[in-house]
Length: 189
Image (cartoon, rainbow, N blue to C red; front, top):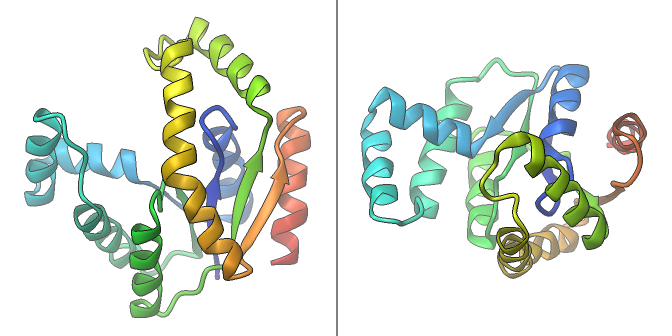
């Protein structure tokens, strides 16, 4: 069973590459943002908690996010494997995910980290902002997202590096070239 986490700074192409990875390797895709939105839309107990927190300008706690991840894993017991996008974002979440893996007898195959220089990321995101209509694809928002990524997510990469589970991927080139780089790593896992 293949269980992969995909990392990379904003604009690195995680969403794009995740689509290809999940298709090629028949993995169940876990996007915490999407699951949270689904829970809120369905007005589940967790969804209502999250909706209240977000309406007050807060972020869902590590415990709430872990609860939805566990619920998702438990409800997909027949999965060939999982592809995590956007989780874990903190070392605490990484530790919680380790516990969930133990509980469900899963093992982490690897953490793929898309490596892209910041100037290329900015260029990609500004270009994307012209057509996507994403409000967070403006220069101030982009810079803030990089700072946030550096402060919160880089320690997670160190956590996985210390477990020898981190695989840097050259994330510059065409979508196909980057996907080929990813596949070369996955084939060795």
